[in-house]
Amino acid sequence: MAKTNTIFVCSECGATSPRWLGRCPSCGKFNTMAEEPVAPPSHTGAAKGTAPAAPRALPLSRVEYRTYERTPSGISEFDNVIGGGIVKGSLVLLGGDPGIGKSTLLTQIAANLSQNHRVLYFSAEESCSQVKLRTERLGLSSDNLLLINETCIDGLDAELDGVEFCVIDSIQAVYTDDMSSSAGSVGQVRECASRLMRLAKSRGITFFIIGHVTKEGALAGPKVLEHIMDTVLYFEGENQENYRILRSVKNRFGNVSEVGVFEMTDRGIIPVTDYSGIFLSESRGEEPGAIVTPARTGNRCMNVEVQTLISKTSFGQPRRMPLGVDYNKLVLLLAVLEKRCGVNLGGFDVYVNVMGGIKLGEPASDLAVCAALASSFFDKPIDKFTAAFGEVGLTGEVRAVSYAEKRVAECVKMGFKKVLVPAKNMKSMTKYMDKIDIVPVLYVNTMIKSLFKQQ
Ligand SMILES: Nc1ncnc2c1ncn2[C@@H]1O[C@H](COP(=O)(O)OP(=O)(O)OP(=O)(O)O)[C@@H](O)[C@H]1O
Ligand SMILES: [Mg+2]
Image (cartoon, rainbow, N blue to C red; front, side, top):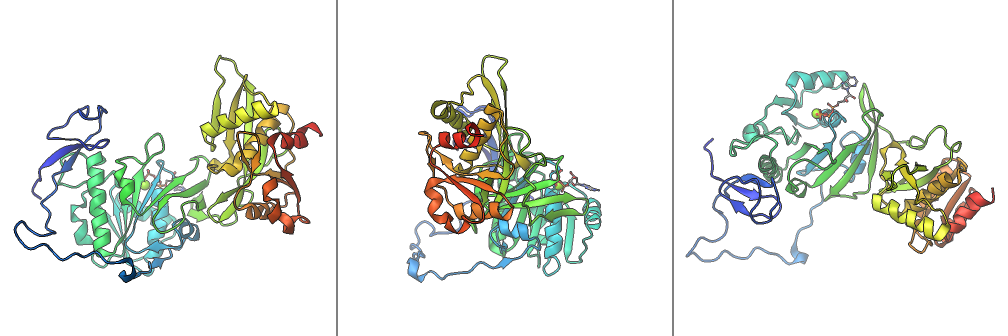
């Protein structure tokens, strides 16, 4: 294919330059200039000197409503996360650490889909025999699943006849001849992704695209990659542990708070539908510093254990190390504990960990973090069948949270005996009164008193 002209565009500020520069002269950022092809002249719209084209914009009432056709992927947890099935013609990006199981998950989905549809697996990272080996290990086979080992996506168009679903493994490994930069560079990733988008929208093909993540955990490549996609999913988990969590961070066709839990086995990735108990430790309740909180994930709730550890600071500055809880939120809660509850952790290093690699992003987990920290401070364990949830304000008051009923229902289901809830949520709790001991909490310090001082 003939080479087209290229320019270098700053991925931060959009400044252009005819040649590569280490530092953008406009915004001063380093290493942000990425090569891009010069856009061909537009063919739409009226040419100079001809009559203007008729306007095509329609009033809202005359726009025809189109329902999205959804296809089940054969893995219920995956369908849940993407909003109830795969939408035809959409672009789904799956990011995750190396070796977490991205290719395995999408091979399974491709094989499931190929029972009724034609599916192409475009593997730029592994040879066809490697992919076949995996499908055999997972016990999958289908003649409708086509494999190709290729890195240049210029020829992809010709392979897509009759194909309804296509997996690209991975976007960082493919390249187009239109650009001279190497595969994985910002320009290549952006150009390949826009090409896939055009194919998806013009031919109604659904693309599952695998993306690598950087050391910081963000998707490698330009931010525009995530803008182009309809759905962006992250596959997370500790490599040593078998549980994997699928999280949606962007979804044009559904809720983004839904989470899917999977187990990595030698037979592939198996969805875990009954995950009650898997985010709780065996020795819960024996040692100080841990409590369970019912966390909301989309439309469901799951009980997750929050663990804390404090140790005397050896060097000047005390360390705060939260895993699964936001750093700033932890600092804020420590300030509330110190000022409003007399739990002074200023001279201690504080470590917080949420079991199973779960991320507690919602304010409803504040109260559990405070209770766990206080338990560490007083060196008194909290009963293993006690849970807590509620948002903590700077004044030390405990605010009402959403989904309170569902959270309590989850605690009842799992046989918990006591749950500390925001006093302002008590109205909706009447039907659970006889099933579990519900303790209303108005201020954090009253909760701490009831948990530790009167034991
Ligand atoms: N023979 C096997 N038996 C059991 N588990 C295996 C076997 N081969 C691979 N695995 C599991 O599959 C994981 C690799 O999965 P996969 O190749 O899907 O990951 P990936 O996210 O696509 O990785 P990459 O980023 O390298 O492409 C390994 O970490 C391992 O846990
Ligand atoms: Mg892979």
